[in-house]
Image (cartoon, rainbow, N blue to C red; front, side, top):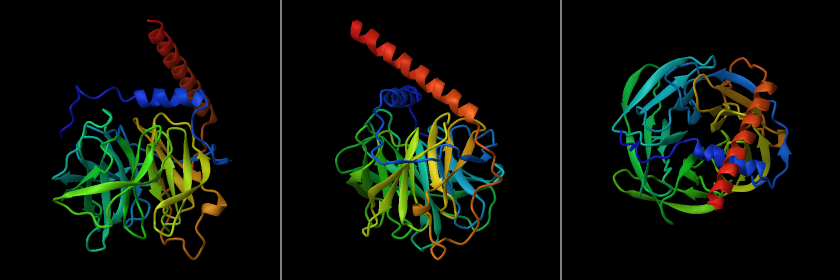
Length: 339
């Protein structure tokens, strides 16, 4: 574990900044919004060890299982969680650090087997780390607590280091993409084949929403999504496999600190999670145009459990809190200018 706790700023600062922007009307929303604020709770992260769920990925081998991990400074572990929110297995990664884990995705290993990728790409110091690391393990064929040797891939941005919390893998090409967490965010593409033991260059190929906290490709590879603290933007995927034209902006339920998103196994809804203990994972339906056709729908069950209606009162309380935080930030800025 190589996290320097003395050098890292408080993690709530991005939330305050995003809330202030939202109140000021600066959150980017050029595409029409699809009404999805009434998402349903699919399950809650019931394991007390899961306190900062920062990534989600649906299992390719185990129906009903969703993988998650904690944020920075924890043990290099992946939790396999079922549709009732119970931890079914803990995978400990040997040969891996957990400086600032921020995202995960399912892809394939060098032999074409399902693999779990975890992205150590956070950099709250805004460019302090000259490289970032993505770890890969082959998804176990059977669930159970175990230690798994990880393959490490070192990546560098062609235009200099930056903070990021979003990693996506195109299921058709197995190519990896990272979206930076900036007010002028960008999507970066990794080489077609990642190489261990050498530096892999990330190159800018498109734009991303401001304050992007996670993203994912759909199971059929037709669309992808990038979320922020408050909503998610849906994109088409071009013939080159890259995120393309923005299609819609999808409202998400108000969350404590919404940092994770992925597609359900059937590709018909999104799963959106948050940091914090005992936090819900919401199932948010996709618009009909983004849902897979019956012929392209993947086999297997959806990862959601029995739905629970979204608590509108909690959303109102969260909105009030965001307004209060934004007001405090504005007051602090005015005081700073006055001095």
